[in-house]
Length: 132
Length: 220
Image (tube, rainbow over all chains, first blue to last red; front, side, top):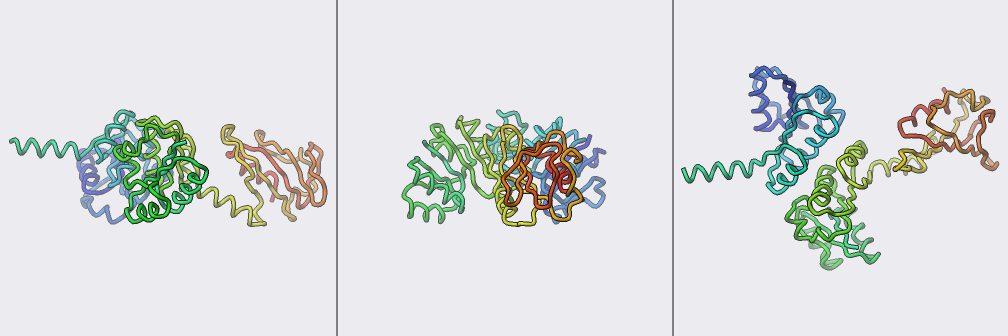
């Protein structure tokens, strides 16, 4: 599977590492080269410097042949916009994006995006721990 | 009309003032408290502090009864989301987004935004008009039809001078509508019209053929 991951923060880098170890073809995209320090030395995928909202950068990352696109930058709106570009402009079969704001997440799931709100998920996990 | 403006930067500020002067009911949503205070001090209670992309803020602003939402922050993605939330959650009939990256125009349109205004393209066009040596100027865009009207000047050294219109290999979808010559009244070009140095050709073309049209007219 060819996967593009936009945002090479902790989550993005971790996901890239996991998929890379399983033998998938991974491209991580970030607009700050310093973020790529989080990738392990044996990472076989590609680390590309560029803006995930820019069509040219996405094409360079190989979005036209990608099977999946994941948007995990710090900004909800950046993730939402990139995910919509991947889904509606480039017709990537599987698109997932992170939206911290639960209300915004609800709206975009209604609009057909596959979304995860870490806020909701983590609060739920914490609650379960407390109820242990 | 009830109009909501997102983003209290310079553009949002002047837009709010202009809309208020026209007698509209306007609410400006701005994240920064000091900017919000300054605007309230000057224009009265027209500013709500908050994130215009958040459903709660927009609910507080009474977006459900808004006739129009205009997002003019400096970030294209924020303007997109504010307009989409307004449109799909609050059913605002008309959403307008400012965009900085002209490439986003088609993307925004595809994602349901009614109108986009590209500040970059507008400034570029205005500067083009002021650069006399620039061979092609955009006069007008007919957006619904996907056409633009351009003005192309035949430079003195062009290899096309002395040629007739039919000798040029013009793109089929572009049409030359007028030729303006110095101190003479404009004429409608015909197949046997001969090009002269300094001719100003007014043409209608789809944007994709603009480059082909320009090189066909200007020659080498």
